[in-house]
Image (cartoon, rainbow, N blue to C red; front, side, top):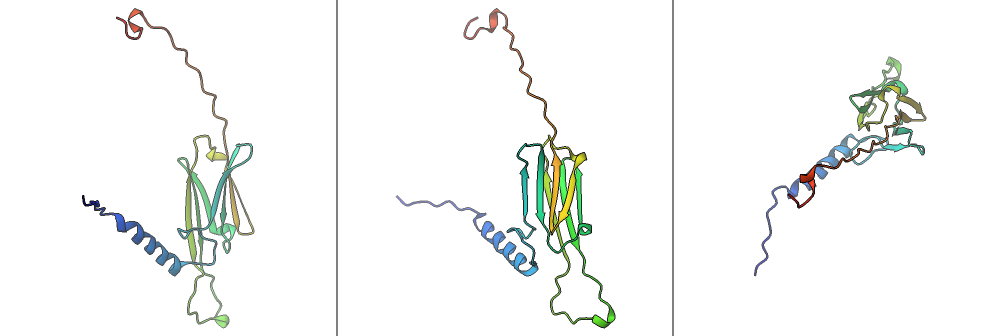
Amino acid sequence: MANLQRWDPFAGLTSMHSQIDDMFNSFFGSGMPMTTQGMPAMDVYTTDDDKSLVAEVQAPGFGKDDINVTTHNGILEIRGEKHQKEEDGKNKRNYMVRESHASFYRSIVLPKAANGDEVKATFTDGVLKVTVPMQALPEPKRVAIEAGGKDSKSGQK
């Protein structure tokens, strides 16, 4: 009997999507450490005592004034935008390629225990470190199960 192969109309999309990503990343790339999606590398972890969530974003070339950190509706948003510097008239250059403008956006859905009102951020040596303290969640409450009437016994009426 012949093997029938199912037609998948979306089979080529994954490969095409990957090729388009590669094209844009190679064309618009910069000297920053990047993930495969063309964003600055980011690590998100909890501290050893599980009292804080920490996000570290590698953003060399950016200054602390180029980065904006916000929390809203349980989402931590990190935006960076670096503009090209103005040149004075006597040091004017004839650029063939100029990649001095860069921007990025990263967002993290915070866990329910996160305290979005007490977020702290530091920027040292091109690394942004955002610390979100975690609130202690209430312990689960055990619910007592009461016995039912005569009709509640399984299998008996």
